[in-house]
Length: 155
Image 1: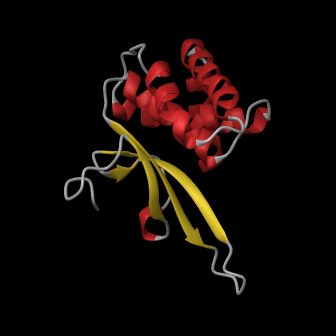
Image 2: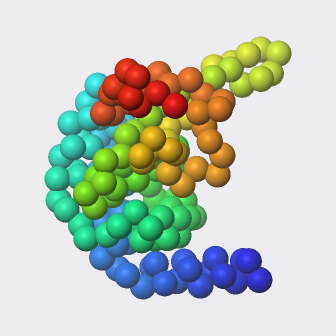
Image 3: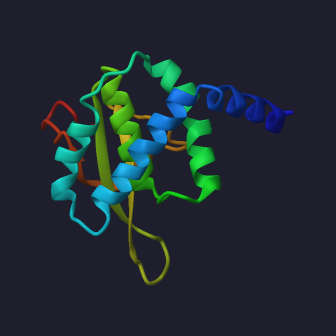
């Protein structure tokens, strides 16, 4: 039953072609823009992409983004890592007039080797947006855009 509800939700979101096209274009552009470059170029790219406003609220975006992200992931035509998803979420939320923050964090993987792993996510009003678990419990913030304001943005 849950799978059927998800499929129905996916179909509703994909029937809004303007949303799908915009999301795919943003992800495609980010794939080209980020590529092998450092995070230093990312803020300018994010700001440029989010300059075009869209008329959606956070609840509408929260309903629409997951099916679009699942479609992009299954299609395997665009880069599909947490950085690309978070950057696209940031652009869509900023274009809707919200004030998101893109956050990148690092942590040890918990194995005996203790390899360093990373994760990227978006915060809205100081809380992770569309994350199954709060990444702040595991990852230490290493970079954000816009940069955190000490004492204000700290969780």
